[in-house]
Length: 254
Image 1 (cartoon, one colour):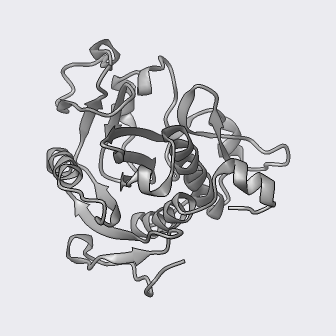
Image 2 (cartoon, one colour):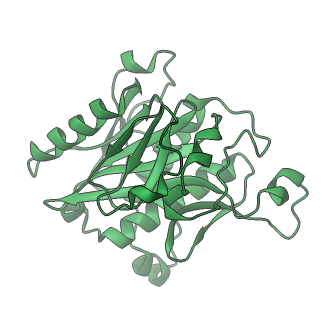
Image 3 (spheres, one colour):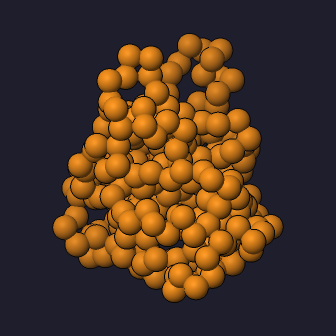
């Protein structure tokens, strides 16, 4: 799936860019490492504002120090504990409140939707599918919920994983996008191995009582960088694939 051989960097902030195959328009993969949220936020907006029709799409892989982010139309009341010591940043993506912290992969998608002839709803579907495929690689069954973007723990009828059963319906990945001039930024976060306590200080994505889990809670001991690489490859593949209607018509699978 890659234009050049992929290697998982030991020091992500020093890693060279990699080009991923993504249909007619390749995607540059950027390993940004541990980075303050404000740095990523400012950089995403600057990148999008400076884009031209020839600018290559990019996926950024980032890990953030603890931070709550609140979407453009988000309700501050969903922050239940104001004295947590974790900063709250108001941002311009869709959605309500979420938490980012060490041990979570954040993949920012800087994609020209017009060039790829993608509608926003279709892009969201593809991002969710990429996460589902990534987690399936680690034998974790997950699915969508109607009207609630993100990925949730599912229980297969033959599932013998007690941890999966105990956390059925819990959220393991969240997403939110901003579209400006036909191009996206922000993206998706996937919980690998992190301190989940801060999620108790919010109504995750605006849903009171919604449980949030990570891969470690479900019994998967996986390295952040390994999972990030799988996720980036699946995102690039999905973004470059056929539209859902075309795939169904031709019998193609993504």
